[in-house]
Image (tube, rainbow, N blue to C red; front, side, top):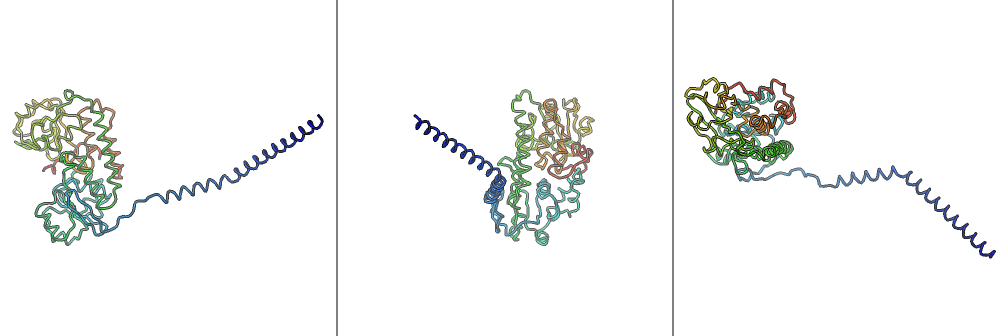
Amino acid sequence: MIRQVRLAGIIGVIALAFCMLAGLCASFAAYAYADNAPAATEATASQADQAQAAAPQAEPRTYPYTFTDMAGIEITLKDQVKTVYIVGNVQPLVALYRYYAGNSDNLIECPGASQSIIKSSVFAEIWPDMLELKAHNDDANVEEILALNPDVIFMTGSATGDKYEALVNAGLTVVSFPTAGSGDDNDTFATVENWLNQMGEVFGDAGAASALIEYNKAVLDKFDTALADVKDTEKPSALIIFQLTDNSCKVAGSGHYSEFWLDHSGAINAAADLSKLQEVDIEQLMAWDPDIIYITTFSPAMPEDLYNNTIEGFDFSMLSAVKNHQVYKIPLGSYRWYAPSCECALMLEWLAIHNYPELFADLDMNADVTSFIEKFYGVTPTADQVNALLNPSDTTLMSH
């Protein structure tokens, strides 16, 4: 019995010793962890840095570099492109290049028609550098262009015609910028996207292109979603007058930019039965009797000309849009907003607000123009400049 008690006591002492030893080990382990924690954190950070460094990085472009332009022509660039010369009659490309590049330092001269548009808008103050460039017209010959030694020529339109052939045969690198967008030449957003992406191909930097493309897509999706449930019977009828002078009225029907603008801003094109740009008389205008009339900046006519009946050969007084003062002049930004331009997202918003003033009553067009110019052009416009952009008054150069 005594032996059993003694044995139990010995076992208890051994157990106690084990417990004390375990506690000591635990304490030591805790101390050791606390003492070494900073070193472990530094090691983890170092591993993260190493992992980031090991991640795939965008490789710098090597030359010669070959790509296929929008006209389907294989273009080979021998070296990094810096200087650009622009030819052709699609004038908004100049402003789009100016946005992409962020300046005009490497633009050799400027097409005169594009420079005139900038001069007649608030962009004469936002982009004063564009007015300092020497202006040229489409009659510039190959010898004159060769003497300027541009790295690349941007040619608006398709890779056809005598001028294109002459430039290529002279050994110049010519990249075509057709107006067609995604196979549909009335999609202004697609045209702008394709032009910007092609500039990214030429210069090897898609940052500026991606920023504006993503912004445009978000705005287009916003208004498409907001207007998706509006029935055709609830939509206003609208007419875009492309040109209006004495005894002549040319309107925009289907298959032109008007189709895209009115579809996506939720209006019914009153001239939808016509193809592209067509001359019409007052009888046709009265038969359509649109709720809203828009006048492009391809025409010097202003809403007041319709309200006051100052256009010879037309009596607009009986039209509903005139009676209700629903005639609007399309704004003039870095280019004419009716055509593809840097500000096509603002054009869509402006139209949607006029088509549905109650639905979009919370939108502030002036604030959005200000924000856009700050974001994409790095300039804060004055209130007067924004007002002038949205309400163009200098019509002396508004012709086509």
